[in-house]
Amino acid sequence: MHLPLIVSRRRQGHCGSAFRSILPILVLASGVFAPAQGQEATPPNIVIILADDLALMDFGVYGGEARTPNIDALAARGALFTQYRTSPLCSPSRAMLLTGMDSHRTGVATIPEVLPPEQKGRPGYTMALEPGVLTLADRLAPAGYRRLMTGKWHLGETADEMPHRHGFDRSFALAASGADNWDDKSYMPYYQDAPWWEDGKEASLPEDFYSSRFIVDKMIQYLGETDPAAPFLAYLSFQAIHIPVQAPERLIARYDGVYDGGWQALREARHARAQELGLVPGGAPLAPMPDGARAWESLSDEERAFYAAAMEVNAAMIEAMDHEVGRFVDHLKSQHQYENTIFVVTSDNGPEFARGDNDWRLALWMSLNGYRVSVDGIGGRGSWGFIGPEWAAAAASPSALFKFYAAEGGVRVPLIIAGPGVPPGRIDSPAMVSDIFPTLLDWVGAPEASASALPVTGRSLLPVLRGDVESAYGPNDIRAIEVSGNSALYRGEYKITRAMPPIGDGQWRLYHLASDPGETTDLAGVHPQLFADMLAAFDGYAEENGVLPMPEGYDTDKAVKRSSTERLVNNNGPILLGLGLVLLFGLYGLWRAIRAMARRKPA
Image (cartoon, rainbow, N blue to C red; front, side, top):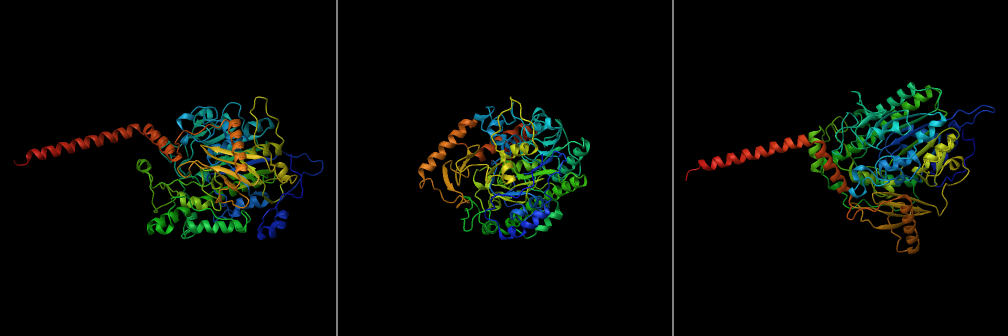
């Protein structure tokens, strides 16, 4: 069914004056329509565009530096959400997006790379979608939809866990957390190779591969090979801007000098723009940089040149993705499918903070796999680009922290929903990643699930999009997130959150997000009863959803290093054994030579 043509009744909140001035133009230009009298509506297509590790303000329409005209155009056509939250890690977010369920109910409570041994194989922690969990593709099959997927999957590792077992007709899926964007190879020691699968069979990549271009090319191919009369679900799951950040040189050149001022300058600039755009209230305090963050001025000239160039690549990678989104939109327009297509554009979590220049194990692995960390040729083939914790914190501005953590920088990301009948505007009421699934099913009028399907925990945002209600959540309704101990619970204008080591201390804190979106002032001592009530609410959420406690002394960084070292040994056993034997024989030979020289010395 189509969304009816209505006047939006959504709360506009703190709209910037520039946004208000162009709103009437956007309404006229948006192409909002309803079926003509007596004309039967064609079921709308669905396109989900999922970026990887993108911050709230990375798109141009949210105030970012990268050029994103195609995504901005989708935002102008539909609803731009300002208070949307996801989970702080990729796999749980993807599971929630595709199933509408809390991640612990799907089997993907965290990611394999950080899973402690005590949780392996437990219900909710199998690291693949479990029996009874239905995806959006499963639910759209009875409605006659073509279900197509290209890009990062990361919801299982074996053939039986790939998209074709979860409702998709065609898929070209990356089973890993990431991969190289130019070549068919792994990006970290945890993976021996880049595990790409096509329709459940191991697949290789073309010689002219670049991830964003290929993901769109393959989707266009699948659309051409399937029934053109049937509506479609197209799930485009980009690698941009996951590490290694890589982009075409011509796009990188467009950002020359943009980030030369350093991370604190960017953090302050984005904070100021966030206030201008009404993403945070005027005068809201800016969260400090994380403990241990380096001052830009403390870096050498060479280091500053490298880090500035890394952010230039990061912006170029966003633009490259946007260009491919535009190419896909142009294809839909050429097939007369654009007007009757729902678009969802979002990110799985906030920006990635990992570094590639401070771990000898990673350095050893890079040397064995043809990677370099250098300003020379940065972003090209063989370049292992990253932005690091300081740039990640700056990109996450006006929020605190970044990916992995349930602070706002890890979970507050962009969400754009555009489609037939959606009046343009911004939505300032809460929304969660698990809400997208029931919203889309409600929108297209999908058949009810079978009795054996596990219940959905998300809420439909369709009444909000229509303007029938201001929010899908009441003032006392809770929304909760937990991934590997990093946790948050929202109730009204308040939030409790806990950050685990190494960045955090594992202690709960209370914040008033309406006035303190940067989470700078802990109010647990000021409102002890509210704090206690919200902690109790989290305990109830954890029990209801099967959240397991973290082992004593758990540290995410140590968990990643442990699992990566184990995989490095398992994946490269013969090579490491050979290197060890060479070293051993070399030392033995040196010892023999020293002994021989000692014997020849005169008495």
